[in-house]
Length: 264
Image (cartoon, rainbow, N blue to C red; front, side, top):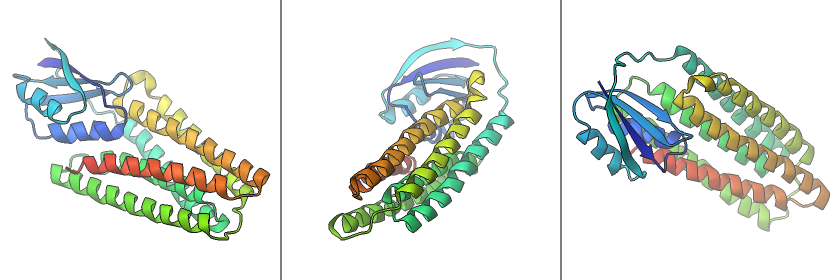
């Protein structure tokens, strides 16, 4: 068995990891892939030559570069069932808060909450693609990614249209107290997600590291919505809510294009 280490300079979230997994799917010589998202490293355990694997990695244009190849005695790779349980927990929390924030956002007329709910949904898509497609065919994985990406873009575009309507219309102020309270609970939920993921940090699990990066970004968005709620009350204007909504919708679309990249 050989162990080859690649540096992937543009690998900074679960989307790139899934892209690499699907690109290398079907290469029979690969025994295991070990991702280190934080350090942007990929370790491939394989038999035979590395040429086909290296070519596939370079074709992704993610800044891939082979660092080293050496022999290893490691031949068994056990899938961590606990890791799946943790990811299922994070997926459930994200999807639950998608429903909560979408509902309260519509009721309170807060674009910020609606946008944050879509960000939660985007995270659910990323985790779901990894979990639902385990053991599935490459075609199935690509189909799931394409549906998720286009659905996400559609929702974000509808959100942008609603922002424009409210920006030029005489819309009532959003309920700032609902914005702040719900976002605080969402912040707590993301904090719980981080705690859950950190439980496996010492095990150096790739999905855990990637998910922690994603969830840390969610915490920043939650703080942004809370700040917008405070400014809505202070300025008696809906503009802070619309601004945070635009920012988050843009992030959602960026994430959607990353997901769509998996379907190519």
